[in-house]
Image (cartoon, rainbow, N blue to C red):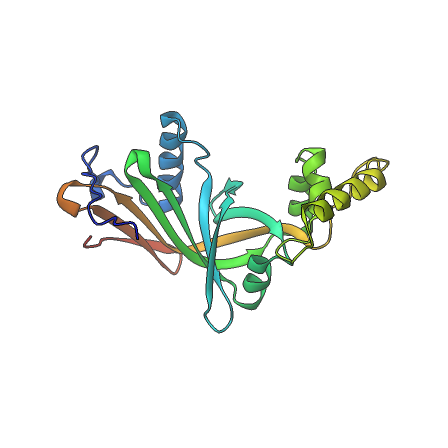
Length: 213
């Protein structure tokens, strides 16, 4: 058994105070995302997405944020994947951005809606052709016999779809938007007394509070 109890890291890089924060957490998120990009974080848009069944059985995985706007946080997936099925049954999710090198995290909870077909079409056709074919070839989250099965499926769809002037988007593939009702900004501080500033949605407004670490 690996003993991890001795691992310690002291957080010293920054301070987070209420006076620094934007009144709109989406603007604050954009500032922190820009900071992460300038810092050189690898894939700063990588986020943990947690979903659950209607009965409350959870699952989590890493996906890529493709857009943030005044409404929320957008990602794309196969609607027949495990996360797609769970979101269809229980349209709530949590997101976590872990920018450990910056000693920062962002935690989000929200209601989830599908994007319109038009919005999903626009993004689908912005992807590399190989990724468009891959969306057809992979029965995401389903058991398959082997890697060869997947590779053969890709080759078959590649032959079938490359004659199209524009590869159609599969009806089972598209976007979701997480519409937040909670966004927390976490900054590491010494002695495990971290700064935690949280926004709660109150009707159309946001209430800002500090949480104990």
